[in-house]
Image (cartoon, rainbow, N blue to C red; front, top):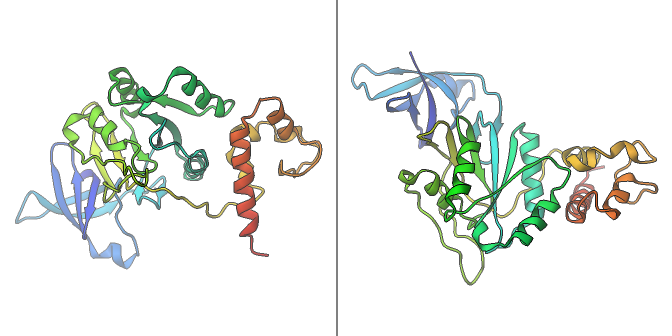
Length: 292
């Protein structure tokens, strides 16, 4: 049997990269019996058909070390979260939700602020300041800035990465800049709505000539937290987690409790007010939907 990785799945057909060729495969019926659906990113073993050496069957799926539901992708190593510095303006609340989604799925998050040629250094410093003491990697990218594209290539090299973020922030344009032969369809910003038109229809892996794979995903402008309770939320804010023991109460939610070290850190500028207010908004959402 031959090793490969599923790079695309459409209508029950799976396209498997075996290194020097893409093989169109069907999945064996035993996967349906076991209620297992092959996913983009799955490492598989395939067998070629006797009739056609360019088609085959998926015989085995290696054990997944993670699985993302939206988009449905397996074995992703890092999540590159794309927002534009402007046009459209970034939603830092949605960004926080995506950072939490990365942590929940054991992915390394990398924050990419695109269209950086539209921002001055003051704006970039303001953005960096929002994420102080988080240890998140932040890069500024632009299809018009070759140096930023080289930095992005270094981040992507030899890894399976997901590109995510709202529509219209330029994910596909940046991918085209990273590797021009992607020839991805790029969208335009609706002048009326200031939102991106959805241009990417399904999850699909693109092989990088310098090593690694990336997944371009359907853009979205909303994301809901699932399965996180009010006491767990603070675990997904690194700068809050660092100061969790500085509060009077061990179970402090850093909300309305007295002698809260986190709230003091916000007042002194150690934690950004933007991030803290987003934390409070998410905490209130979780408490509002709590089932007693």
